[in-house]
Image (cartoon, rainbow, N blue to C red; front, side):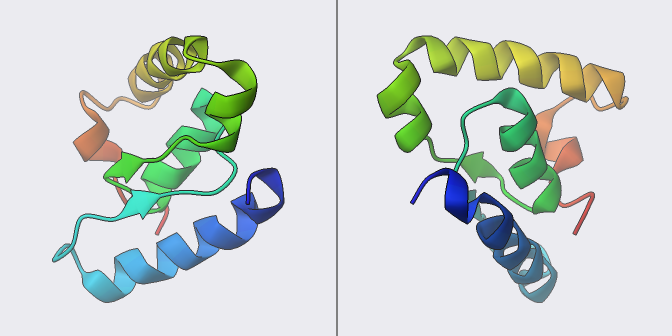
Length: 90
C-alpha cells in the first residue's frame, strides 16, 4: 500500500474510468499524501479519494492541506468544482 502503488493504481483507475463511461463513482486510492496526488487521482477518474498511509503519517492536518491545495489546483486549471476535473486525463 501507500506510495509504491501510486502510479499503478492511478493507471488502473484511468482504465476503469474509461470502461465505466460515467456509470460508476470511482474512488482513488494508493499513495495519496498531497493535493497534487489527490488531483492526479481525480483527473484520472476518481470522484472520491481515500487517505490511509498519508493520513497515518501526517495526521488530520493532511486533510486541510489537500483541500486547500485542491482549491488552488482547480482554480489554476479553470475548474469550478472537483466534478469538473473528474476524468480529464483518462
